[in-house]
Amino acid sequence: MPKRFSFCFAVAILFSFTAVAETFRVATYNVENYLDQPTESRHFVKSAAAKAKIRESIRAVNPDILALEEMGSTNALLELRAALKRDGLDFSYWEHVEGFDTNIHVCVLSKLPFTARTPHTNDSFLLDGRRFRVSRGFAEVEIRVAGDFTFTLFAAHLKSRRPSAEADEAELRLEEAKILRGLVDAKLARDPDANFVVLGDFNDVKNSDSTREIIGRGKFKLTDTRPAERNGDTDANENPRYAPRNVTWTHYYGVEDSYSRIDYILLSPAMASHWLRNETYIATVPNWGTGSDHRPIVAAFSTDK
Image 1: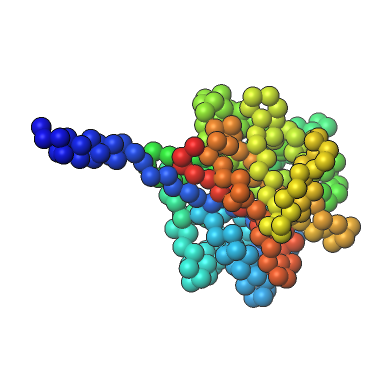
Image 2: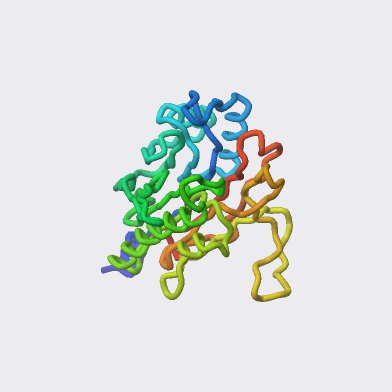
C-alpha cells in the first residue's frame, strides 16, 4: 500500500471513530400561574404583558430543554410553545404532567427527542396518620442528545411554603422530597453511572431538610450547579465553608419582601462530568417580575468529558 494512501486511510479511520462533542442547555422556570382560563382556586389568567416577558426570559437562556412549573392546561402549554416557535425557539417535543393538583402542572419542552416518558402522578405518603398525594407529581423523560448520549431529566415542583390546614407545610414538602429522592436512588441502583438532571422549584433553601434530602450524601450526592448572575462577581468567599457571595436568588416572596434561592439544577455524579460550569447562570432581564415571581436558571453541558 503506498505510504500516502496508508496515511489518508488511517486518518479516515481515526475520524470515523471520533465523535464531535455536542453542547446543550437545560433550564427550569416557574412561570407563576400561566393560566389560559380561571380555575376553581386561581382566578386570573396570564396577561399578554406577562406572557411576553415570560418569552423574553426564555429567549435570554435559549435552552434546548426547558422544565416549566406552574403551567396551566395543555392548551396553555401549547399556546406558549407556538408563541416561542414564532420567536425562533422550536420545541418539537413536550410533556405535560397531570398531577393531583388540577390547576398548575409540571411540564417539559425540548428541542431534542424524548426516548422515554415516565410521568409520576400517583405517589402518596402517610403523615400523622393521614394519606397525602404528591400534589404536582414529577416529570421523568429520557432525552437523546446526539449519537448514543442520552440523559434523564426529573422535573419537580414541591409543596409551597404557604401554610396548610391539613399538615405542616415543611413536613409535606419533606415527604414529597423523600419520594423524589427515592426515584433518584432507584435509578442509581440500576446504573451508578447514569446521566441525569433533577431540577425545578423545590420551594425551600439549600440547608432545609427537604432540599438536603434531594441532594443526598456520600458517593451518590447530587451536584448543585448553583447558577448565579453574570454581573462580574468572581471572588471566592473568604470563609471556605461557604459558597461565593454572588447573586443567586431565584424567587421574590412578596409577603416577606424577600429574595431566596429555591429553584435548582442538580446533577448525578456521571452528569456532573459533562457540566460546563462557566455556561451556567441566572437570566437577568429588565422588569423580569412582570412575567413571574421566579427567574429562569440554565446549565450547559457537553457530550464530551
